Amino acid sequence: MQLPSYQLNTPLDPSFDKDMRDTHLIYDYNARDNEGSPEKWRYEIWFFSDCRVVYAIHGGPMAGRVNYQTAVYQCIRPGEIWQINWLEETGTVVSLVYDIPRGRISGLLSFSKGHWENPAKAHGDKRNPQDFERWRGLASIGTQTERFMLVEYADILETFKGKGSLEPIELDAATF
Image 1 (tube, rainbow, N blue to C red):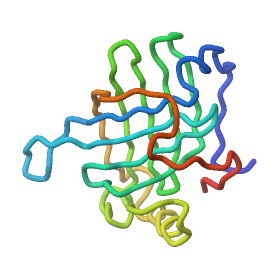
Image 2 (image 1 turned 120 degrees about the horizontal axis):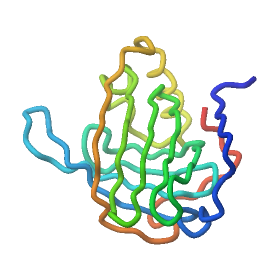
Image 3 (image 1 turned 90 degrees about the vertical axis):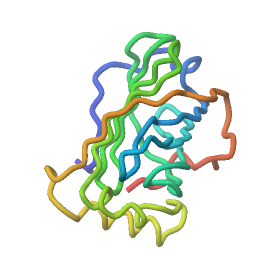
């Protein structure tokens, strides 16, 4: 078995095409800086296909990161709530819950030690081979249990269909 691998035993709900496919969100996490002062961490995500996401980070410690990942979608309630999960090449695990009626993203971001403690090294664009290789190296720093667990919600500012300012990817583009 090639790893990472995903096992999802429930078929993709048919509401995916209406609720998720080609949906683009811009949202702000209500976070705090190192001194404890409130700040916004702006994220942007495009639900590119039934197995990929494309995203960019515009605010907070990971600002300047442009990436795409193999993702697994699970419908909790059609037209209302979806869960999106993925593993990054940095070793970080992301699990988002998209609450459509409330216009909110809730997330668990389980940052690897290498990713969280070296945010500048996580900046760049995966399409750049040097950035991609550097990001892979972040996964080897620390152990599986040495993680920064960020549990936060974000308010969605914009929802639309299409790529917006993000670049499309090939469906077979390497994610690891």
